[in-house]
Image 1: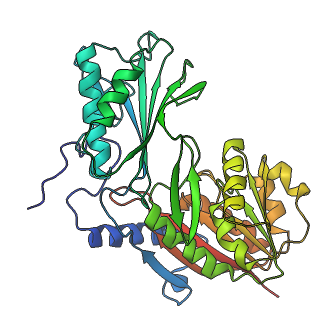
Image 2 (image 1 turned 120 degrees about the vertical axis):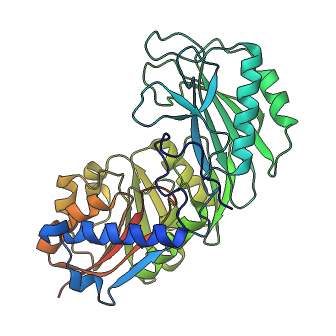
Image 3 (image 1 turned 180 degrees about the horizontal axis):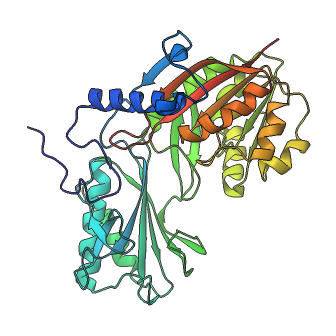
Length: 395
């Protein structure tokens, strides 16, 4: 018998606890169709006719609906004022309260065991968490990553300066019975006032500072702060759909914009002429270059910088363009340039479908049509879902 998550309704993550995965997918698909059709007013970029045509390919499920996250960031705090030290997830609609997360359903079991162990260790030591108001205390975050390919784990403790219990942490983790292997343990110092993880100083305490992940037959090194899709096997479905949509030719020029660690670019490179990736985060660009070299892809190039500014540095007249922007979508000025670039096909991958719905009219004005579209569920139990659309140039 299914037992509901004790955090459901209090944690800001899951929305479908207790519902079957089939029911969840049906609800997500219905919501997304309504979004693109413009709700009751029917003023969205796509029509009901489109969604009943072969151009719409439905919603692709995640191979795993629980324990699928390959990265999670946990916070130190307390569940109630003056309560015991808690390592977990932020409570919904609360800036301060932290809920215990050793039972999280979307986290791998190894994550939950590590969280429970680290919380117990630091409680026994009497260590304090960083208070956002007073800016006092030591412990800030615990960032965990897992390779879906090897099961290896990367543990990254984030604290204020002044943390001296590194040896005790390493000993506690190395003796912990886990399904996977702890490949590396890191300590990151972050003295910024922001609640975000800002890596001011990183120290390797044990093992290696990276993981290896295999996607679509290629290997990728994942560093502590590099971006990688949080659901590896569902992301593989997404990338296979992109490869299917783009249909590159051996002499083609491809732009991969907002390329991250270059996963999509490298998946396309073996069947393309040249692929150029642009990514703002320099660490991700460095990782992309290293991964491309390791995979023997000499025709794959990466530039660090803002897409709007770097478009002029790319070889002109691309045959195909891949767009995988952050949640806010494509910058309006960059959108105008891309819509007018003349590419035969543009594949827009959106982690926030409402941004894609907003951006589509700009491509319609430039004489593109949505030839195919699908949704891919990378985030089971949550409201989030990816959308991928193939835009083809009308003659």
